[in-house]
Image 1 (tube, rainbow, N blue to C red):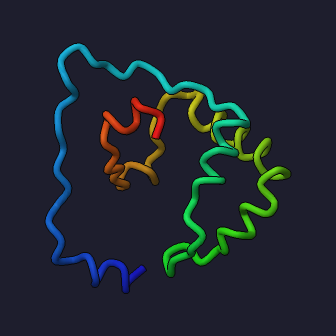
Image 2: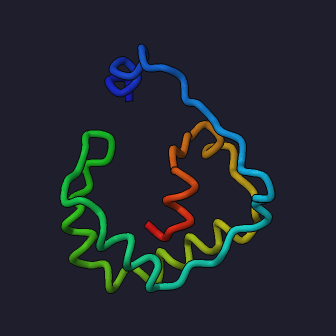
Image 3: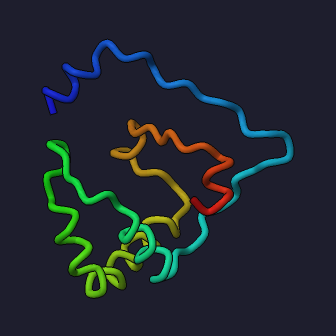
Length: 102
């Protein structure tokens, strides 16, 4: 963790854009097993120091893990709140890409 902090300490702070007019986020949508399986399948076949778990292992057992991951994700999304330990994370997703299903 310290290595990550030291290598990113000089980075510019994240920037935020307001949502386009008429766009509102009211609730999370539930995920299906197909949603979870598709995301796992699209993961790049590489690991990092921050998360050294071999991605290929996850892909190899995804048929067994997908139902449990789907349940975990949906249980996490159901309350519609963000837990304290996630509040420091930054998601740099482009709303147009998210809306297009990429």
